[in-house]
Amino acid sequence: MKQPSRSRRVLAASRFACGVALAVAALGAQAAQTTPGATCGDWPSYRSFVARFVQPDGRVIDYATAVQQTTSEGQSYGMFFALVANDRATFDRLLAWTRLNLAGGQFDAGNMHLPAWQWGRKPDGSWGVLDPNPASDADLWIAYDLLQAGRLWNAPDYTALGTALAAQIEKREMTDLAGLGPMLLPGPQGFVNGGVTRVNPSYLPLPLLRGLAHDLHTGPWTALAQNTLKMVMATSPRGFAPDWAAWHQGQFVVDPKTGDLGSYDAIRVYLWAGLTASADPLAKPWLDAVRGMSERVAQTGVPPEKVAVTTGVGTGEGPLSYWGALAPYFAALGDTKSLALARTHLAALDDGLPGREPVYYDRVLGLFGTGAIDGRYRFDVDGQLIPSWKGACE
Image (cartoon, rainbow, N blue to C red; front, side, top):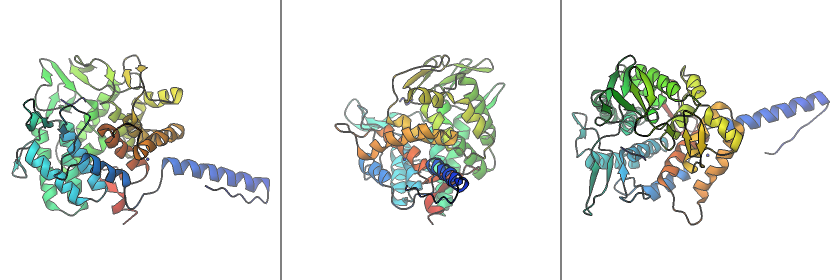
């Protein structure tokens, strides 16, 4: 499987009036930083992403990989950003490429195959599927994208596709953990070995699970949301999420393959927590379970690239992608100082770094993060996507 965004005027007739005005100004500045209004119109960062990483035929390319890979994750994220940008033409190109190349043309409501997770240059120089095993996080995102596109663009065909894909996820990528209940496998094959089931906390964004539960009315999605919180709480003893974990003998344990490492997968756990609607009853306990990262950034000024989650020992400095993932998390926690740091770092995504090519993971997590904190989209308590073009900017 994959590894891997004032002037001040005080009129004071008395000390009391002055004090009130200053307090209101301070509160207003804080609110403007953590809960900005909707950003309407063009989205330059999205346009830059499409221009750099999306081929005319709808293929998202990760140029940093030797095989010039495309992943189902990249396609799913691209579709989400196209929906947020109200760019139906790009959405359709991404969907068409996914259908043809990752699902072998079998991606229709009556004939739905889960897409392969990895496509790229083969050892013989030809191009095609490198690993046919699907990735369930991408499948969740694509199903969600299609269901939301059906609603937002009033397109029943998308709704039918999303419903059919969700049914295949439930059929092929779900398991029932004894003593817990429904859990998403990272893919259909290779994650159950004897009594050990490997799981990935970053594969389960709470807003998506809420959205599927709301739109489909049946299925394991609500129970899966509850169980995902239990997993996050059990596997983050120091407030840091792991990349991978496992279920063994009725409890979550350290993953036998990757150990207690929290890094490039886990950074998304904080992102999903930050994107969850604050009114969701699972939002606060989820944020509380992974406060370690906020506390560490407050202490050191940087997110660690890697963390041993059982001890909380961190090493290295996280790249731009980490700041993108953490910006909504800081905002949700009301951590305005760290949010300001994130904004400063993320400015480099638009300005560019001298001598360095844009990096796929920096760009996609940057779009998630800046899009949210700039008010281009949000999720409501039912997991419904609320893009600015369908709300405040309409």
